[in-house]
Length: 155
Image (cartoon, rainbow, N blue to C red; front, side):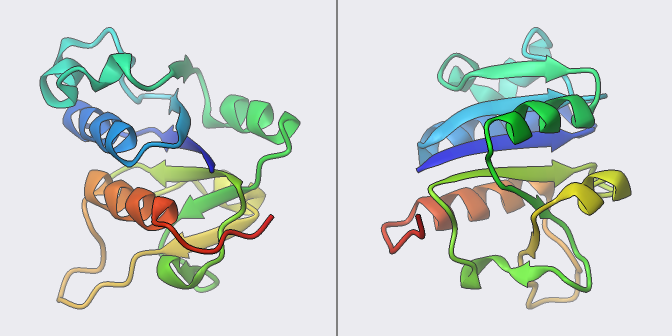
């Protein structure tokens, strides 16, 4: 399995650092694309949460999320945006390809509409309580561990 993580304007350095730790922990993450306002790895606040994981997972900063998606498209990797949308599928019911990119969006505004329109699929984490969504870092962790769990993967 080869996973690419696209962070679409994540505002909290602590969320980004936590996503690095989860990416290292789950394994199979080829690269994290830090887009727009998302902090780059030279931000000292990232290291505070990442606790060394910045060195374990390849990453690169892009001026825009579109720039990152162009690179991913050139590699012919499907793009799955994680977003609450009418046409989004429960992340636990999806069969994932061997290579996939997940887009996680801004903590309040979510994944940008232009990015959603370019996505091959939209997925969501169902909520059983009163809140409608998880913290973006917790959401990324749940999805990474589900996707890397040993199970049948479609070619």
